[in-house]
Image 1 (cartoon, helix red, strand yellow):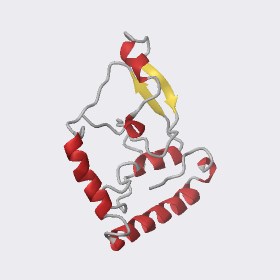
Image 2 (cartoon, rainbow, N blue to C red; image 1 turned 90 degrees about the vertical axis):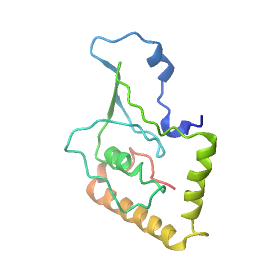
Image 3 (cartoon, rainbow, N blue to C red; image 1 turned 30 degrees about the vertical axis):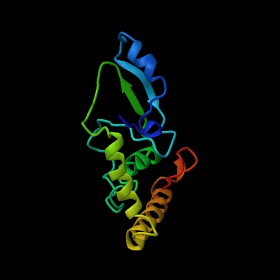
Image 4 (cartoon, helix red, strand yellow; image 1 turned 45 degrees about the vertical axis):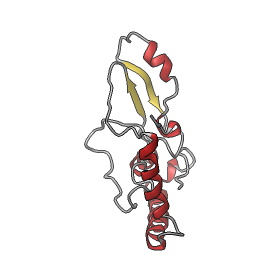
Length: 144
């Protein structure tokens, strides 16, 4: 199996698996969103910001909501005995397909898609600075 460790790693994960349980059900309360490529799966309140759909497929379209949640000053509580899974774990063979899509969306192979990404990222950053000026230094810089 192939795993994108930087995107899916949770600090203290092995401790979490080894732990029996907690009194309040929380393992890590108020975990800060601390890296731009982190893609934690989450359950949220209905009042979180809407997903920004201006990003092209496979070009940070999955991390953009986490970026905004950080700028909106949300934190993450990691719960005990709650697991979310999906069949989306990529095998070595399927990683090539993802890479091919990402490559196709680069400047060299698809200038229009690349420009759409660049414009989406620039617009997103400007909107974040306008809507959430107080958290600019707190959150990781969105990147490709």
